Length: 114
Image (cartoon, rainbow, N blue to C red; front, side, top):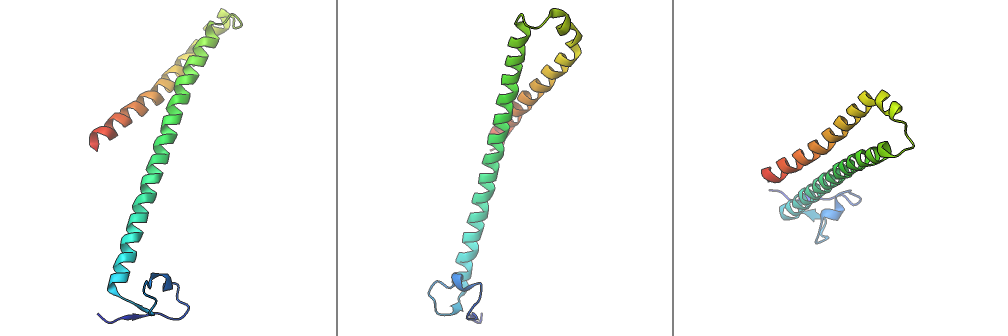
């Protein structure tokens, strides 16, 4: 293959490792491998950030269920008001439990598929 002569102010000058003004196939292959490694690293970091965010969401859901339960047992809330909010509280617990269950389910599935 013919050598690839670089222009003086080319944006690809950083790829020329031996600074001879010519890009060899070896230099291009090294640059391509480095780009692939960097893309894989960025994808892994994105996946880790997503897992951290899901874990944080599950913890908040669990803590909110605990806090609501504790508050409901305090004497500051009248039992009549709790009975009025019964349907809303049921939906709240089901939704929060769904978030926690989906987190644990997806974690188990991901650990199994690896």
